[in-house]
Image (cartoon, rainbow, N blue to C red; front, side, top):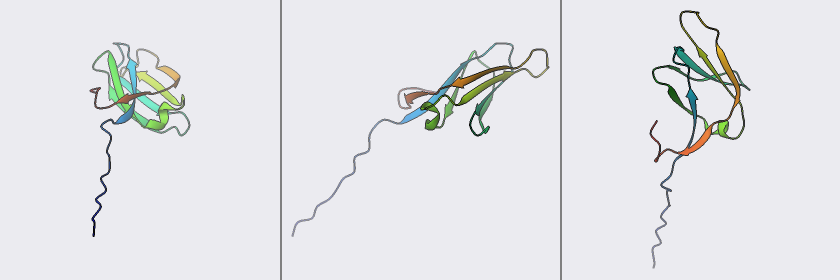
Length: 96
């Protein structure tokens, strides 16, 4: 009698989606909102000029993300960019 052992193959890549925001240095907070559900996808303080958010992969297939940057002292109006599409990356190659 022969025994057969089946091995599963696990690929060595990990696809994810990211949104990179080039924020105004005077901004203090950045939000990502799903345009279809109005759920907040992410929120980060603006500490560097480029802010990266890891988002669900479904946001890479359509332009359904709104990016909002605001300041905390109400000096400037909020800036909103609508129709942002996430970029698909291999998470093994990119450090966020």
